[in-house]
Image 1 (spheres, chains in turn purple, orange):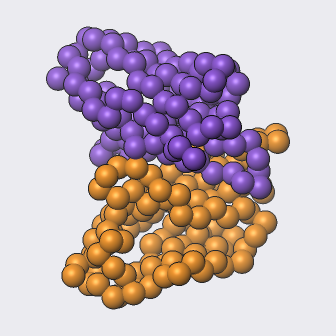
Image 2 (tube, rainbow over the protein chains, first blue to last red; image 1 turned 120 degrees about the horizontal axis):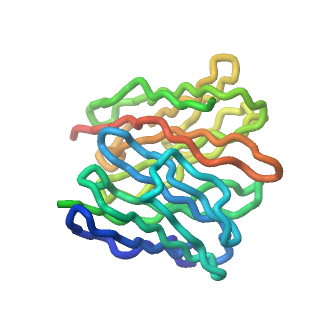
Length: 114
Length: 117
């Protein structure tokens, strides 16, 4: 069974640009969450999508957005990149079953803003 | 509000020593899940254990064991006879119940464990 796949693995962007990151969840997982990990702030929740709808949102500015497609694949977009957006972006998927609840994470996309 | 505290930022132990990673959580809910994840240098978060708030039984899995105490809001993780491969950052996490599902997972700051040969 394939795991959570995130592309690309590494990305270098210039301040002011925008970027789109992709996440393909485990087959059958309809919930996809995104996290930002930085040395200073740790793992911070960005947003969660379920059945193409944003179900939960963290405390990030509107420059951070996401969406989910009918096949559960998800993308997140960051517009007008700032140096502080440099981070490891992790995607996680899960089933909606309390008896089997838990995230499976992808390997992440490391974004560097220069 | 929910919160997870891992007071130990970094721990170093010599191989074969036992080590306990502390985790203290805060929540107003009576139904929640607690987790431990391992993040090796490669970056991917690896799921170790899930425990729901109604199950206070301790769990052992090989060299790993977990002690869940609701009275002290703690969910500590012990590695017995540590090995170099255990070197990683370990995260404790919490998720509160929401309807028929669960809310977002909130992570603690992590404890970086170094096992020295």
